[in-house]
Image 1 (cartoon, rainbow, N blue to C red):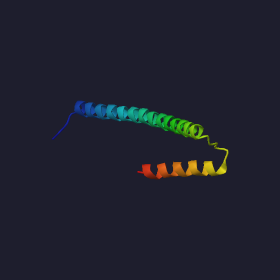
Image 2 (image 1 turned 60 degrees about the horizontal axis):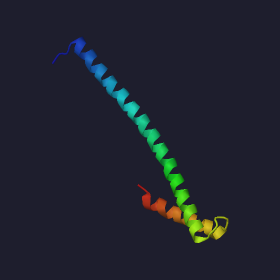
Image 3 (image 1 turned 120 degrees about the horizontal axis):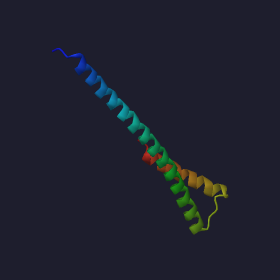
Image 4 (image 1 turned 30 degrees about the vertical axis):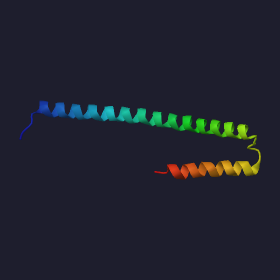
Length: 81
């Protein structure tokens, strides 16, 4: 099957437009994911401080800090992909 120059140009332009759209989407996706990472981190810290305050505990205590770190490690292990 033969294709004309005009058809070839149209196909190339369509493919180029697709690539541009995909690149724009991936850029948006990356910024959303980056924002999600920061938001979740802030939420986790807030929860940790709320729990410590409610329990009357202080992160300055080395044992408490180790337990908090161990809890975060546990959560990370659970969320591994």
